[in-house]
Image (cartoon, rainbow, N blue to C red; front, side, top):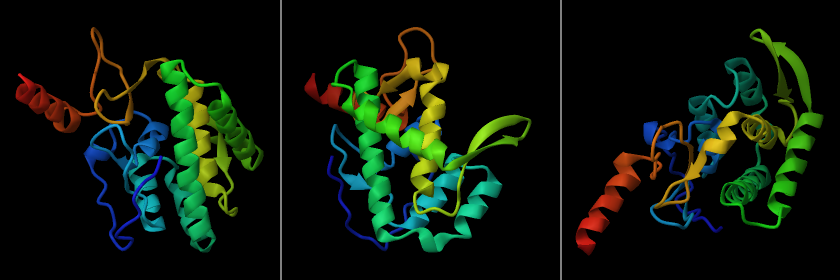
Length: 201
């Protein structure tokens, strides 16, 4: 997928509409503005966008986020490109898993990223349980943090409830009953779909 990288000085104002995935890994995939089945408008334009997103998404515990920010010098242009590339590779993997299509290569690539992240992380007690905590002093720390979020998602019951919006490329965990959700957010894609259906009548 190709995303636009125009207006690099603009900082995306993260709000409730950016966090409809129900899991940080899915919200990370949704960091591309999408009004159709194309991923065209990049929201992670600069590192401060990623830092603000991580805080709002709960990707890291506050102490770990502070530790990451203390080493902001590791966050270069190449690392941001690598983070975006990882996101699009992970998008293809989740798309394959939820659609039952694909040849498994995207999922294999995600599995390698997860293994690498675990290899660079520490298994430590945190808030009454043991978790993988990424190393905050490596250039791969943000990819590792997100890869560990995918590791959590992939072994959770939520994976079987992951759906893709009927109108855009965003993913979400459908915890509803009955027919279930069709749209990532009724305020955006749901309303647009209703307007389009009305026009087509």
